[in-house]
View 1 (cartoon, rainbow, N blue to C red):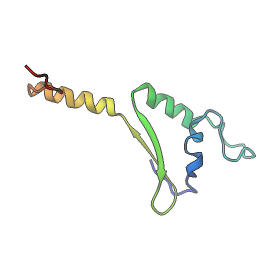
View 2 (cartoon, one colour):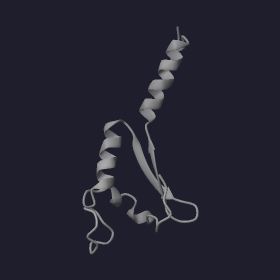
View 3 (spheres, rainbow, N blue to C red):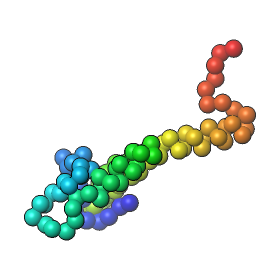
View 4 (tube, rainbow, N blue to C red):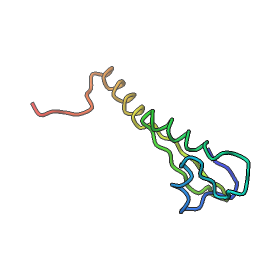
Amino acid sequence: MCDHGPGVAPEDRQLIFRRFWRRDRRRTDGAGLGLAIVLRIVEAHGGTIAVTDHVGGGAVFSVSFITARLAALSSKKALLGETMCHEPL
């Protein structure tokens, strides 16, 4: 997901996933739970989440489910009669 807002400062990129964390505590919109919930859901499914700069301003949030990709690759290889690792005979 990407946006064209103010972005996320590098020093805040780990903080934004903490429960109730907000850069500006004077603002009353939101409780600061959204990204913490997303992180827990992603991690519960074996994934990771990262935030980077968006070209032209803003932020890019990337979610990866590597375990699911490996499982899919493993299933495909099993259908083809291949194995993920080769043991010496």
